[in-house]
Image (tube, rainbow, N blue to C red; front, side, top):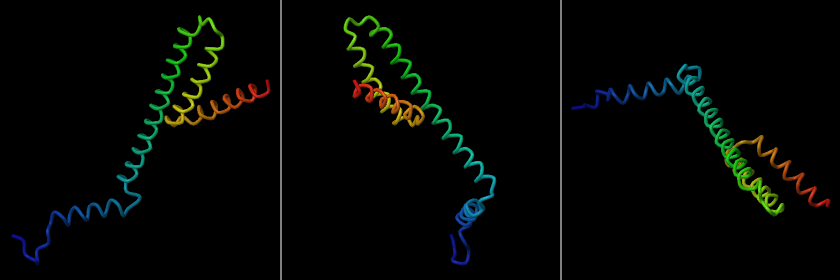
Length: 117
């Protein structure tokens, strides 16, 4: 049984350990946690970029296999524009920023050319 004079040992020890860890910003544990969080974020970003690259490869293969022998030249152009828009949306969702900028510029230049003609 626990009396009022006797403190609850396990809770006090856990509380002290947590206070020591969180109160000292130069603690090696805190720096390891921050470093692991950065590494995890880098890994997530690289996986998103790789996933986007594979999707682009599949789209290009689809274009080569199915649109190369199209009888109507307008159909591949329409599908290409739709694919660019879909890839732009997917790039934004994937967080691939430099691809978003390039696709925005490409779509902007295409719309300018279509407007000038």
